[in-house]
Structures are given as C-alpha cells and as structure tokens.
Length: 310
Image (spheres, rainbow, N blue to C red):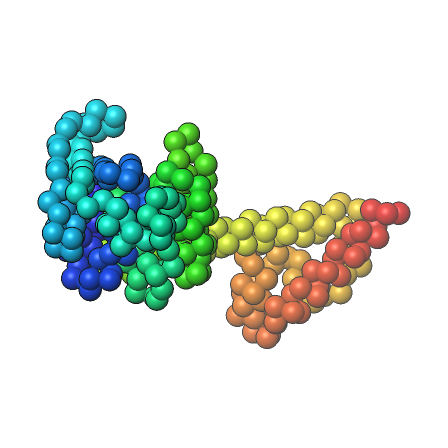
C-alpha cells in the first residue's frame, strides 16, 4: 500500500461527530464529484474512501448509495469505485452547504456553516484529501503533497482554508482541474497532524529527521572541504611569496622570527595557521599564537608584493 493509501485508510476510520461527518462529506463533493440536482456521482480508487462515503450517507441520511466497480486502465489498472446517490439529492446537497436556500442553484464552495469552527474546517480539509489527495513517501521521493480539484473557485477556497493554518499552500493549473499543493516538509507534517494521521506523522518525521541529519552532515563536510581548500590555496600563495624572496635574494631582509615562520610554512604546506602555531610552539619551545603566525606571514607577503611592484 502506498504512503497516501495508508493515510487514507487510517483517517477513514476516525470517529467523528455528525457535524464533522457532514463537513467532511461536503469537502469530498466540493473537491471531486459530478453533481446534479437529481444525482451525485463520486469516484475513487481507494476502497476505504468508498466505504467511508457509503457509510456516511447511509448513517446520516438513511440513503443507500449505488456502488459500481470497474477497472481503471489510466494508470496502474486499479479498480475504480463509483458511488452514485439518486435519492433525496436536494436535501443532501442543501445539508452539505452545496445548494442555495432556494434549492435550485449548485454552489462551488460550501456555505459558511460547513466550516464555521476549527474542527469543521479540518474535517472539510480531510474530506478534500480523502477523495483527491496524495503525499509522496518521504523515503522514496521529494516532499510533495497535492489535492486535485475540478473548479478554480473551489481550489481557491481550499487554498485559503489551508493558509489559515500557515501551510503555505499554492495553486497550479493542470490540463484537467487545479492542483492545490504544499512543498515544505515541515508544513506537510503539520497538514498530516491536522488530518489526525498520527502514525504517518511519526513515520514522516523519522524520515525527515534522518534526511536532515544527512543533509547537515553533507553541509559540514562541504564546509570542511571548502576550508581545507581555502587553507591550501592560501598556504601555496604564502610559499610562492617565500620562494620568490629567496630567488631575488631578499629573504634575509626578514627578521629571524619571520624567517622561522617562513621555514615552517614551507616544511608544513598543508597545515592551517592554528596547526602551524602549535607545531612551532612544540618544536621551538616558544609559545607562538595563530595571530603571531598570521602577522609574520603578512610581513612576508608585504615584502614580496613590494619587490614585485619594483
């Protein structure tokens, strides 16, 4: 079972209040359903979602939906479950906030009472994800969560709803419909928590933490490598200055302490300044700091630059 399938299986079995079931069902129909005044048709590849829709309609409205199963050859040849409601359709639509008060105009976004408090908003979002959402498995792919919606107005409504929770959701136009998506790993984790998919949140966070450790390790290694290369480049430049002064017989113009550092630099070309200061301190018995080494090497550079300019 896919990561998205596991999420849907778990949240399909949540116990909710009647109002939460209604908001969730409204989210399902708003996102992806063929709605007419005399019939409602919803389709899904997920059997848990199909059962959820069937049971919700039966338990709340006492209506038994028709379920048809057919092969879906578009992608992975999964079975496609089609739920069709033909009884009490206007009453159901009005109850779900998808029919105006006069009972003759279908709405692309639900009435305010469907998302009138925090829990109802989350239930509506859960319904949207159940019928048309997916999340990439963090172990096998990049971070990406999306919900495909038929109508732009409905997509904007969902996007705004998600961004009330600071999830940085965005909309992208597709050939068929619109994609509301979230890219940031932290925000996807918050979304899954909102859905109450707690097992998947733990799995997601484990993978995310592991990836962040790997990325941090890579960043540290890159920084260390950059520092090593920078030190080696600087050391080579210092050695070039020392050799140049020797070639033009100007090396003896340096005082003894500076010449001492110069000789150690040539002897230990791969050492950093702090390593060089420690080596000199140990081998000579005289304490030499990194600052002293840097100062003396700068004297060498100044003399070499002066000689080159002349």
